[in-house]
Image (cartoon, rainbow, N blue to C red):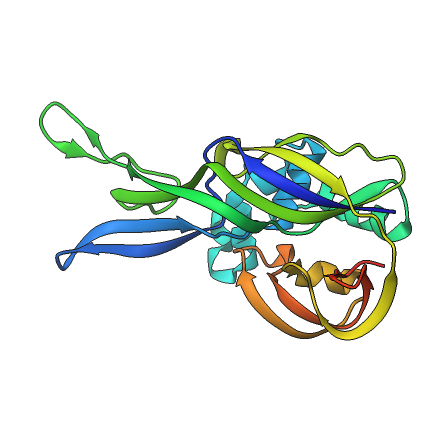
Amino acid sequence: MKLYKANFYLQGVLIFSTEVRPMISAGNSMGSYISPSPHVHNYPVMYGMLGKSAEAYFVFPSLQYLDYPERRGRAKTSKGLQYTSIRKLLEDFKKGKDSFYSFPLLPVKFSVSSFLLSAESWSYALLTRSPTKNVFPRITSYSAFMPGSQFTTYVVTQGNVKLPEWIRIGKKRWGIFKVEYEEVKINKVEKKKNELTSIPINYKDAEFFGFKISTFSKVLETPNVEEGIIGWAVLEECEVINDKICLPIR
């Protein structure tokens, strides 16, 4: 097993983990304002590292409706979101097979820009609006991360695994990252209790790997409950590497 400190350098526009808020100006509604979360969930990162540009996770976002009884009628299938590649990756990692695991991305620095989207169109005489797949305001102000933004995380590998130097994540695969890896030389491993994790972790993955969490502070939650919540955690017991790196890995 090898541990890497990975730095992700954004090379294109990234829209990810957005939060929608009403946009009001001078007391009037102006549509919505969509802002990105500075933390990036580890599942799309692992999909990007696998080179997976299409799976149910990406192609059918409406499948998350199956997690909510009142919305199930909108979905065309009863299966819901299928994380086939991620499930296999986690199982292989737990069994000691050739595999890797990436933790969520923590922001180091970022540049944010805003731009305007509109769901309107014009006829020769009157303003018209074509039906859209989901409810969409007439005017939406988007914020996105721009080139120059940088994120970091830890990546663990087992066996014969080649880590990619470039990945793509986010809406429409806009988020192109150049990834640089620095192997962590493990000089000391010590078991400690009630230790704070070095970076935000996936709560569900930590439990899958057999770790118990004492306290948890959420920084990111997605619409799909199967992905797991991201946040800072205090682990009941953790193997601390080089006196400073605490992660839910053994």
